[in-house]
Length: 480
Image: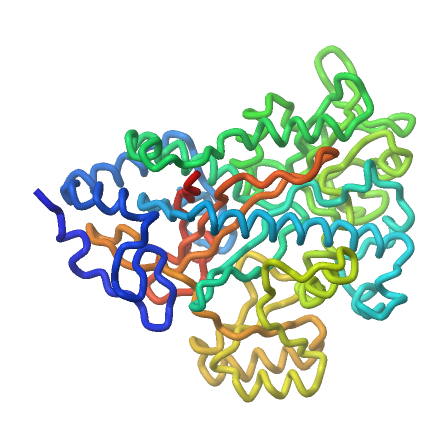
């Protein structure tokens, strides 16, 4: 018996790339096996699989935190059971493009904290660097172990209606979401036990082992002690911190568990102090060391920056990496790739307008209904203006804020994010998606986990995929 009911109301969105169907409404080759399986599966069985996925997420405690929600801040991460599938050819381009981009960004960070050739040669304006809130003067001239600043990166990609992947933003400070990538795959194995091997899907489960190996290799000690520094249970990504520490077999610590003595970092244990060699920190720069940054911070460790400068501890990612993922700097990444690598960018940027430039500001205002305006240091989908959804009053008020400090804002055209099929009320329906692959840099180069986190705008017609704004996620399958 064929379950065509599931597909009966599926309607492709106009001028939008559909991941499952081509323009002739034929199933793309990579989706043929999963589509055949879904047609053989009754709606009732599919609903049971959805329910099983929810129960597994509940039992695993897979949650995220929404600070602005009055109903209670801890939520189960919404998961759509239909996977997003990429071909080996598509993945090859993504893999090469991200490696190229991370290499250039790492060289840029090293340059701006040392010789500053890129500023002297007029590629990036000096005032943009020095006015950036993520530029840490405390990092100028600091020798960073093996010259690696960006050890862990999450690069957000979208596929536009031309079928090409574009970089939406670079997350280089404390990128999150990898635990959901790992958990999504485990759920897929449970609800589609025979389908993954049949499709020859590349594994993502090696991520914690690769991360641990790269962290260990950063230290010159024989058997380095690696810890994960978390801000604590109230942080939105605390579930991820506990998961990664457990999977790597390392201690999860808070600032109060560490102490600096004679410029070395130690962990307090029941047997006394134990030296710490590598810290994978999920604490923002501002809170890392109360002696150098925010004096009121209790999340960091007093004296940790002095220990870092002396080379007695490795901090991952390096302090100050935020200079390279600021949205105002994003505009210059294609030029960085050409400048440092003498190569053309493999992955394109989205056209971006600097609102501090009067002519670009004028263009954005004139086309406001087709624009999204973002704060340069914003994240999580907060603080944006989506021109096509905003009222005249909202636009007027937002622009008034922009005019006070236009250099703090950029604008981009509202893109047609590609859609993937989602199981909504027992039927398949297209929803907008993006993709966050995770890159790990170490002494032996850059490794990118094949797949990443596909985020979904579960609200019909929405372009905002952030979990904090009502989004969910999917498992991402890359075919061998």
